[in-house]
Length: 217
Length: 217
DNA sequence: CCCTAGGGCTAGGGTTTT
DNA sequence: TAAAACCCTAGCCCTAGG
Image (tube, rainbow over all chains, first blue to last red; front, side, top):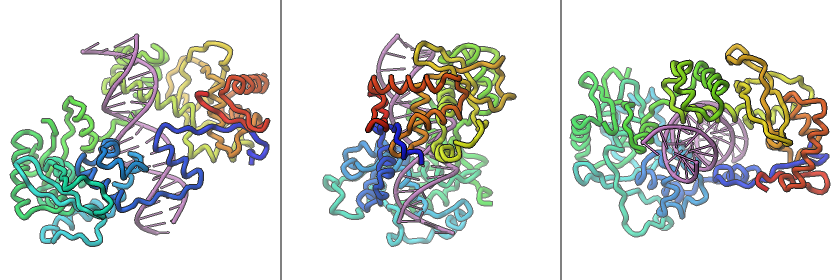
């Protein structure tokens, strides 16, 4: 190659974590496989801060201790992988899911996607406890519980499903139940929530069936 | 199919707070991709009013018809993207380029960046003419030439080539000449520049032959 | 308050590695 | 071939400074 005769080269100093990982790769470091601790922290982070809040999760002292080797992009990519594994539902399989989903017990077996169990608390807030994957490593300070708004779960469901024409209650419920553990009266809760969100303008009902979500409507 | 049964969907209306904008993206609102008309208008606007006059361009009746969906910040961001495209190559193409580069006539790649007039300043400026690609789209009034800092070209060459051990003068020259039209005395200019950059610490010489570039050295 | 410059972030498509 | 890990970049956000 050209390099034999000597020449100029870039001195790599990287301000950005994403690039440092690429540097690692260039230097022959192996791919960093995700540990179950990291995975658990990521899931807990998503429960706490929401999907897409990668930098926020990373900066949260609750998770930074575990995830300090990862970048926000790493988090995003890992979440994508987990999501794919958890719900292989390509748009065609969604309907199947919606149908058979209703009578399924929450399963903790093969599903690597965290099933943060959640319990209702008041009309608008849902108390969620991240699942403990490997209890001894995750340095949570006691029996801390993160709080998640049912709003967000609904939004996540609709966003993830991306169904043209919108998602109906059954599908949304199925999605949430599949991703999270839901209490027995969840269906009723969801109905009430959807009704409320529609009433206050955050969801819009289309032709009596379809609804459009508007966050601050 | 599935959507026939109705459902919920995300509504992409814009509230105003910062939260809302981030939610917006989360909610699946598509990014507004730039059309070629908008791009052309932006370029023409820059030719007419100059780089950095985003609000002025936006208000110009000549362009407002096309750009009315964009903000001044959008213009700025798009211009930055275009500049990146013009100056650097996607790293994926870099290797390809580095390999087949030597025995190839200057070829028109996809470069859509259209020759904005920069402001030259002094000794470390070189007159370089990027290769013209899509002439019909760019509404430029004539054969303008862009002025580019030789520093940047050198850095770009080294960065792009990514040769382990560094790049030598010949390779750098070949790279630049391949991508730009260079004046007859370019070799001499390059030598002087490399010497200067080494002297002032921006390039580091390794064992009399290899040099390491330190951006902010 | 508006503007610009520039750093940063996310989503999503691609690529590389296993 | 597929999955996991990682890369690249368009478009957009945030902040500082004028």
